[in-house]
Amino acid sequence: MAESTRRGEAPDPQEKRTVLPPAAKAAAAKEAAEREAKRRAAAARADNPTWWAPVFVTLLLVGLAWIVVFYVSQGLWPIVAFGYWNLVIGFGLLIAGFLMTMRWR
Image 1 (cartoon, rainbow, N blue to C red):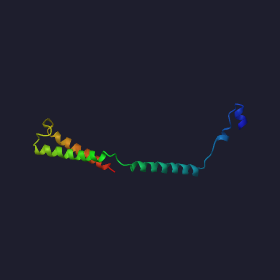
Image 2 (cartoon, helix red, strand yellow; image 1 turned 30 degrees about the horizontal axis):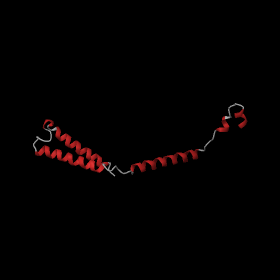
Image 3 (cartoon, rainbow, N blue to C red; image 1 turned 180 degrees about the vertical axis):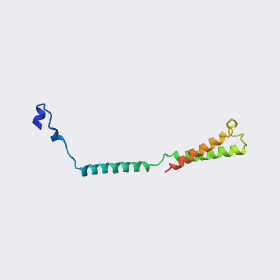
Image 4 (tube, rainbow, N blue to C red; image 1 turned 60 degrees about the vertical axis):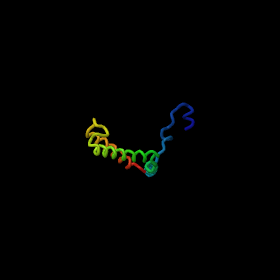
């Protein structure tokens, strides 16, 4: 093989090709799948940033306060021009906070 490459000839394709048995291919694929599963599991166990909990608690409280103020003020507060859209805003804040609680670790 070394002489054929020195003379500028192409090496024999049969000399370079490595044939893996099917069991070795399956084992390599299984090992790669296990590594990927471990990587994903480690990523799923990662903690949230320190700001996560204060933000979702704030969203829940502000959303609740928004709705309560709207009802107690008979629609005059927090924003008169929005009318009943104030309820949508309040519930939107509540839903955003609730969705954040579902991803909290």
